[in-house]
Image (cartoon, rainbow over all chains, first blue to last red; front, side, top):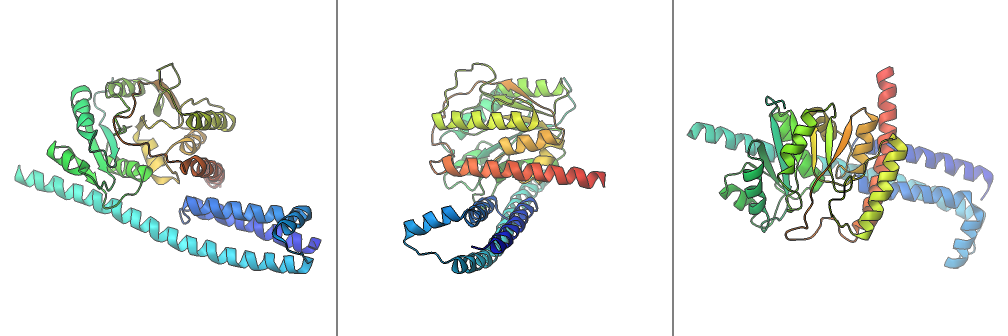
Length: 121
Length: 241
């Protein structure tokens, strides 16, 4: 992979990591998803930055690696990763809403029960 | 001791039908001066029915949200009803109710904001599994490195805290309120101390930490510690701005 491609991939990965951290801070990404995407991005950064590791992986998988194809695959993977993180974000927001609704229902029921017992008294 | 404080004991319970009556009995006998709320975390057994029969205050979550969210619900209840001090007490029978008044008194007579019931600050005879021991040593070391404070028992479920701590915990991004939350609190200026407690073996059932959690728990906690440090850094920057 050319140095140009490696730099672009590394910069995009740094942006992805800060995006994942920011989404977690804002409670918009469930921690379980965050960990998976964080490790995936770190893995991508490591692989793209070390040609030897990539070559070794290629040998294990029986793939003859052509530099330009690897770069193209990395860009495609990053695109898919962005789509997946976005989908996880939507799922996490919905799950968070469900949690809040469940807690509100439970707390409201408790308030209603207290009112009933006060009326009966 | 400040007798004017409103104190609430929060007990999260999930499928604890075999132990819950004993827990209630112990709390009634040994910590009767404190209000208590049981958070039934979507139990599929008779936990809720037993609690209702015993005349206890119960918040029943419509589905199982997990230990952390059950505690958060208890905190929201405590904050909503204006309690000054909240006590976290597990429903598995490992904690001893006589420790509650002692820990509350310790908190009230000190300038600390939170007390953790520790199994390791003194030799209490508690025997932890190997993986749990490794986890505790690692996270205790991490807490020491990041905050400079030594906390021996970062995974204890027995905690006594002032309402301002409960507010921070209920609003933050935490999993089960263990090492990640302690680091975050210390970095925000919360004073945490430990007090030796007695811990018994579980009366029934299994620990919530499964085999899978041996891998997922450290990963999640490490990530949350990292996110927490970033969060505190940016919050301080925003406050200065």
